[in-house]
Length: 287
Ligand code: OAD
Ligand code: ZN
Image 1 (cartoon, rainbow, N blue to C red):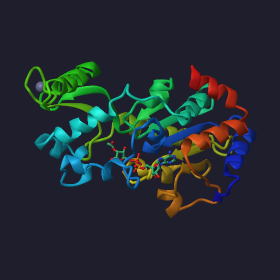
Image 2: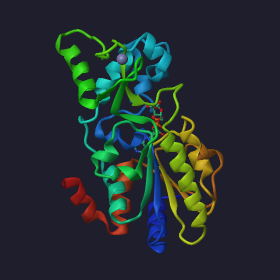
Image 3: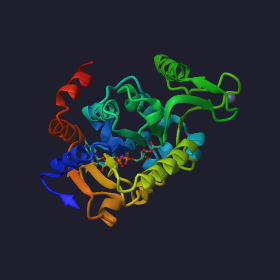
Image 4: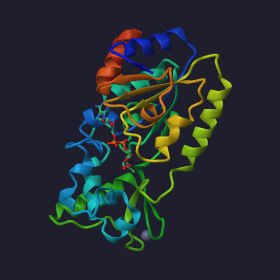
């Protein structure tokens, strides 16, 4: 594994030497911390360390479907804080958009529910929202679908009255829940199907192009997402952009892995500089 101050250069050189190669990003909450959205597991700042005010039996209960049915208040409280529209994409999100513009983006698999990849303008067919998003909402009793704006209005109107009430279905009074994947729920089928296709695609491109799989801003603790890096064919090369070594990069490092330790926006800036893309990146951010 390459771990050095020059890791960004190693990665940039790889991209320059292999101009037909493409990148698959596997991203987590670290991509959005600079946008003002806390991640989950960072000590002190992570959401799971700051949920005490919600009186949860354990932090991850906020995303537990059985717990939600009993007590939806913690999730609704959090939903208001995390609601899309309140945040702007980061430099790192725009760098991924620039990979698309350069024809170098194969796919983004994101665990994030903040839709900031879409906000950065990345085409929806290139983004797999592995843990769902706030974009669609449904009643957990009768399955009636509600547009994003209706769910948001219901949460907000409860707030305006000065009391907390729940987002309830107009038909049956069941609870409305965004299609965010809770613990105990399945990931979207598109996640599994697209990953299978992409792995097959990678295997077929074998040796010719040296495609890159870049894992960024995730602790790689939640499965099945966390096992994706171990499934990358060894004809492709893996990179990790993160504050620390995680998951398969720590447990089963490969000789040609590239670890770039640091803050994602700083890494994005340096990488764009080395690739000669900085001006374009800055234009995207300003646009
Ligand atoms: P975590 O909070 O578990 O991990 C975030 C990782 O990003 C950690 O390794 C941090 O060190 C790193 N990090 C934070 N800020 C960073 C920055 N600016 N630059 C670089 N690295 C940074 O978040 P995830 O791995 O995404 O599920 O969590 C996975 C899932 O657990 C989430 O999708 C969520 C949660 O339960 C749902 O929402 C359904
Ligand atoms: Zn209903």
